[in-house]
Image (cartoon, rainbow, N blue to C red; front, side, top):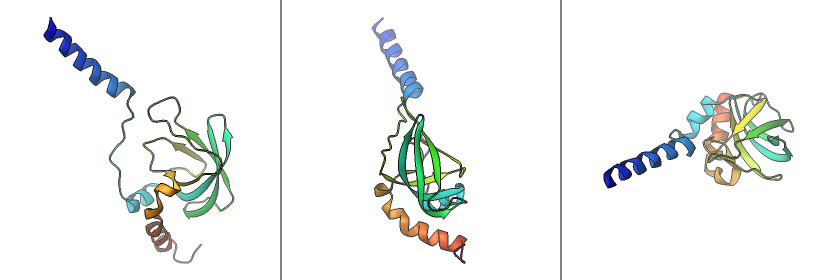
Length: 134
């Protein structure tokens, strides 16, 4: 009976980890993230919205957004993947679509201060992909 309880306890622990934990794929390098995403930009959180925040583009490395353009972002909330963004924060944003951004702890996007090392490489990648600065 004790053995059965131990096995059931182990199974319950495994199930709860997979059911409620935030599972992310292994991170990839800056160059690969740049290639995978349609939009790569430094953005400022300018407003809170019902399901997320509104960003304003400050510097666009890649994509059709322009500096000053505002874009909504949904935030994972109420889960282990929850992310918090506050008005006035600057973020490095990687997005698959220039019109809607989804953020979670698994997203490569995050506070700019945590991505400073990536900026030099992003400037180089942006110049390589757009040698005329257009």
